[in-house]
Length: 162
Image (cartoon, rainbow, N blue to C red; front, top):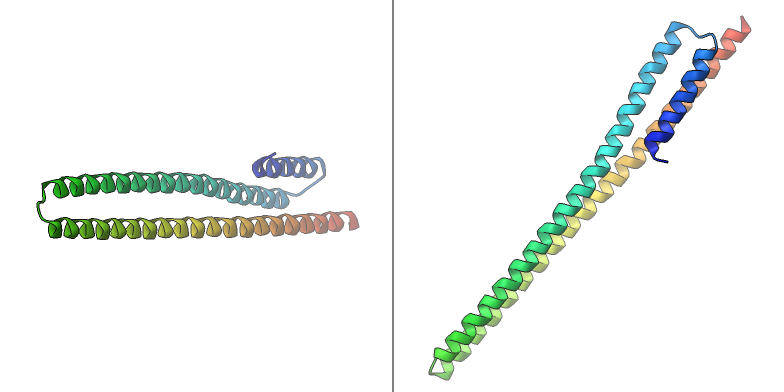
């Protein structure tokens, strides 16, 4: 059962209890506002979860594309090195080309590692922020439910006293 279903079940059962008892128009108005706030909060939490999933999928696709590009660049560099080395007649030129290729490969690997680390950090930060927002939202819903129940019980006691 999802959070939305639990909230709706609670609201429906509370609404049927409040309609069965004699309640004033003010309390039903308050309850309607409470229902609206709870629904808005739950919808926001559900949308956040969808956004996080979409962001994670997009980040994974970007990382995979970057990895493919890196592999293609490395293959091109190796082909160029082999062609230049085959065409070179002097050993010095071959050594220079090999050194350049090694430096290029090191630079590409470092750039890819930095990009992957940045992407992972961003994803972790997004997930942590969503988790914190979800926990805070849960606490807010809990407090609202407790306050509403206390207000309802107080109103019932006042009605019973008269």
